[in-house]
Length: 243
Image 1 (cartoon, one colour):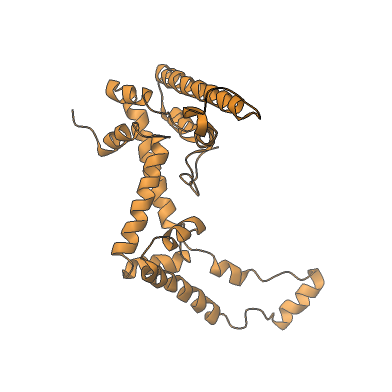
Image 2: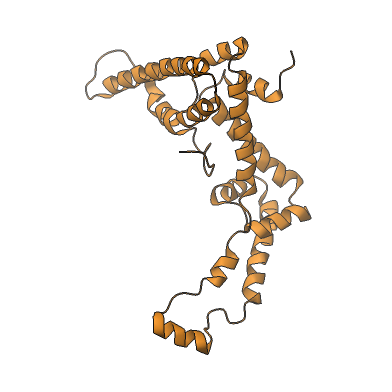
């Protein structure tokens, strides 16, 4: 039987720490940023995207800026965004001055700021990096739900650290068979119960004047529970999902 690349990617990621979907999203994000800077910094189409988007979102803009050795590419891309902003400002004819009629009307009803210029300065399109990652996330979630009954897939998942809570919810929403949902929930619950045990051990060993066994695998349980309840660090930033 031929399996999709997404299936294989999930299967491989189960052997690593943390939520498999979060891990794949972080990998995809880094690959997207690297490819953009390495191959498309001088691409006219990408410049148009940066003009319309006024750059990327805050998170992905700074991720671009932190890529070592790509300062020239970052400067070229964000110059396109800056040019678009300057053109908007230059196209406005005295945007901060009200006409005589507007001045009179403002006096009648109370002065308010002119939001027209601010509106023109808003991004015309969503952050392309966020859009790309949202598509990837949807594909991973759909593939997980589709292949859950596959014995190899399920066995590999049982050996993993489980999904984070946001992705666990997303997968459950796509599972139509009650038996499959119950089976996944049972396995996931066992993983969270084990994590709770590690947290309690960590807390006991963290008490002042504790005398006993040194820290073991539970030493980072406090970080893992944050990732388990909210998603991997930066993995879900700016991604929209049902609440």
